[in-house]
Structure formats: structure tokens, C-alpha cells
Image (cartoon, rainbow, N blue to C red; front, side):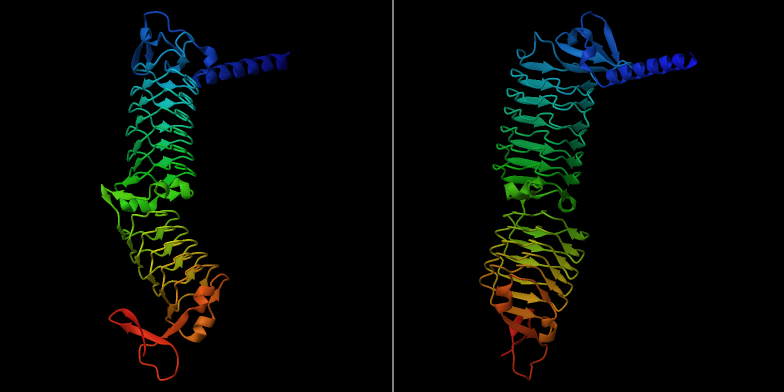
Length: 423
């Protein structure tokens, strides 16, 4: 009997707990109709229930109101929605698939917008988000194919996965300094997007965040050092791959000077940035990571700092106007395809610190004819050179000699800082 009473008590407690969780989670099954003229207290804010007459909503035990959608008589009819001041949250799927919704104004009192809250609202053109929202979550405005205007407030710290996926009419997006993370596919297939401003607070951008944004022509940044420290998950995480043009405080970046203090140039950081014509890398940089400068098609000149040790895979792949490169004495490793398809590359200075040259590192460098090596023939023989580097191997190789050599062979030295063959 005692066990039976104990079991009943446990069940009652469990049922009560589940009920409380349901309320907090804005369960639509607890919808109220908003009739009456009284005022509901929502935390420290008052909400006039008359202003809730068109909405379905729930109220949590602490008095906070969560909008769960429009009543059936207003859904797919109402064009303009103003969420009343004092509302705390908008639930998952609250307005999704509403074919007539055109504008929405969200007040500062709202701190949370649920998953897919406005997804698949094809007529939605303008959305105003208040300063209380800290995150634009998963699929919040995805497939809002008519959305043309979106102002993201300074309160927002993250843009969730698929947040604006397929917002094909969105033209300009400004991410404030408060944003630290942009999720996977956040702006996927925003085919009308032309300009994006990345605030200096961003530290990471997820996979395919800007895939198929093929009208992008400008990426605007405020801080170059911050840009160099962003972690891009893949090629299409970086809007620069589609835009090609990088602007720093309104000025097009052509002569790129990597800020001192950067130790690693991260993958994809300047990939396909065709506005860049020259690069100066400071002594603080130790590693140029994979695809860092791939397809910088207008790049003609690179000056590397004296402490670069590793040049990653595809780092300068298809920099088709790069005519010459001098690698500092610190470089030990050149990755796979690092300089492949640099078709204007005619000469190369390689230090004796090199121990390995990766697969096809210089493949299709069809004009490469001269190789200036700072070591001896014996040193060269000890370098591990992977397959696909026939152009490199077949180039005329010159060995460094500060003084005019007395024996027969191919030698070079510096004259006024310029590599010069001993006559």
C-alpha cells in the first residue's frame, strides 16, 4: 500500500513538471484567445490584451507571454503584423507558411525568436527586429523569397543555420560588431545579395554560409586583423569567394598588407579575392594555410616575411599573374598544388631550408624556366619532391654562390637584391 501511494505521488510530480515545461516551451496546445480588457504582466512589462486580439499565445508561470501565431481568421489574410511591446518570445513556426504576411515589427521586449518562426512567408518584404533579440536562430526567415530589407540590431550575437536561406530578393546585409558567429548555410542561395558587411566581432562562419550568392560584388570589413582571425569552415563560408572584391573601411583592397601579429593566415581567408594585386606578409606569420590565396587572379607580387615555415595545400593555386616568388630562408614545406597553375611564373627562389615539396606543387607552371636554389646540388638531392612537379625538375637550376665560382656549373648571387646569374 505504501509503495502504491509513493508511486502515485511520483506520477503526480512528474505530470506537474511536464506541464510546467510545456508552458515554458510555448506549447501551442495551451493557447489562449486574448479576449478581455485587462492587462497581463510580462516580467517588468505590461501587455494590453486588446493588442493581442489577433494572436494566439501562451503565458508562462512567471507571467511572460509567448506569441504562437495568428488566429485562424487572421492567418493568410493579414499583411502587416506588429508584435506588442512586452512580449517575451515568438515560438517555433509561429508565422511560418503565411502567404499574405508582408511586414513584421518585433519590439525590444522580445528576446527569443523560435525555429522557422517566419519561414516560407513568400510575401514578407520587411522585417524590423528589436534590440532585445540576441540570436536569429535556425531557419528563422528561410525561404522568405520576397524579403528585401533586414536590419540586424546590435543586440544580436549569432546568425543561426539557414537563417536567411533562399531569401533571393535580399540585396544588402550589415552584420553589426556584436555578431560573433554565422551558421551553416545562413545566407545560402541569396541570389540577389550584392553587398555584405562583416562586423569586427565575427570569429567563425559555418559551411556554405554564402553558397550561390552569385551577385555578390563587395565584402565590407572594418578591421583587417579581425578578418584574418575569422575561421571559415569551407570555401563558401567566405563571402569573398563570390564577391571577389574586399573593401576595408570603404577602400578597395589592392595592395594587401597582412597586419603584424598574425601568426597563421587561416584557410580560405582571401580565396578568389581578385581585387588584390600585391601581398606583403609580416615576419610574425609562420604559416600560410590551405587555400589562403587560391585564385587571386590579379596577384602579381608577394613579399613573404622571414619566419614563414609552411605554405599549405593550394595556398597560391591559380594565381595566374604571379610572375616570380622568393621564398624566405625559413620555409620548410610547400604543400600539394601550392603554386599550381601559376602560368606566368617564370622564376623561383627556393631556400636550402626546404625539406619537402608536395604533389603537383608547381604543376602547369608552364613558363617556369629558372630555379634559383640557395643550397648545393647535394642539398637539392635530399629534398623530397612528390610527383607532378616535372616543370620544376626540368627548369634550369642555379646554385647559390656569394663569390664567383671557379668550377663549371650554373650559379647565381644577389646584385642589389636581385637574383643574378654568374657569367
